Image (cartoon, rainbow, N blue to C red):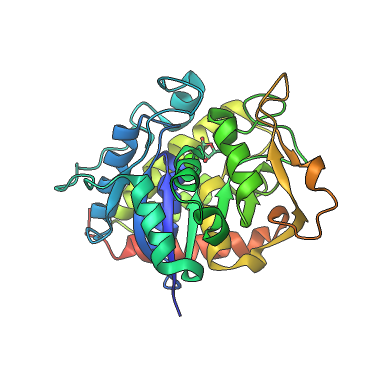
Length: 320
Ligand code: BDR
Ligand code: CA
């Protein structure tokens, strides 16, 4: 049986790998991609998502645009560090043709709300950017929070943040949205830096994609090599690039890839810890735990799954 999935992306290099992971997973039916801001502006991210879907021959997957800035702000500008990690075009300056189609007229918020109403337990939402769109969906439909199943890339519980000592990048973009989502979601799995910085890719693996001699393999290798180069500069002690977003998709396919801690979550929105993901003290004694924070990951198995799925997908694209 396949599980329906909506990917909410700020495409982004690891977002691109997450899209590829979803496309390469027979267990998943990607019913839509929703585009948020973060690594790039919304129009750049949706442009990339559409182009990647076309590259992999999946023009059947619709792309929707979400809000273009955080709840507490009036606009959004790409941070310098995001440009450094993902390149100006978001996909490591890799060049792939524009898609022949455009984003849908329907908003990402409406698409999420309608999909949860229609598919309920058969659907998983995987946000791998700021939680602005998911928070807006929660506000738009009072049953959304109770019915949506969410596997989110964002946050850090047992390790420091990657933007401030407290805050991870996706949460840092819109802490108010993250707080609303964590406090209200009935079922949310947090795939944070605790685990995503344990899953790393190196140029040894991307050489396998290059060796395929296909346009899909070339794209995956070029974008990921740029990302690896950025990680070599900002976190040389890791020895590879963090597979943040694809790990969230991996867990949506197979939750046994991670071990989780059941905990009711919140996000700090005030003071120096703004953007910190942490247990909600007011729900500490609530017997129902709505949050599941990944604290352990089967690194070897995940890397093998990622390489198998992405390599098979890229092998099926046109020769370079
Ligand atoms: C997250 O931030 C973004 O830069 C990545 O795409 C990922 O979703 C990692 O902190
Ligand atoms: Ca992302």
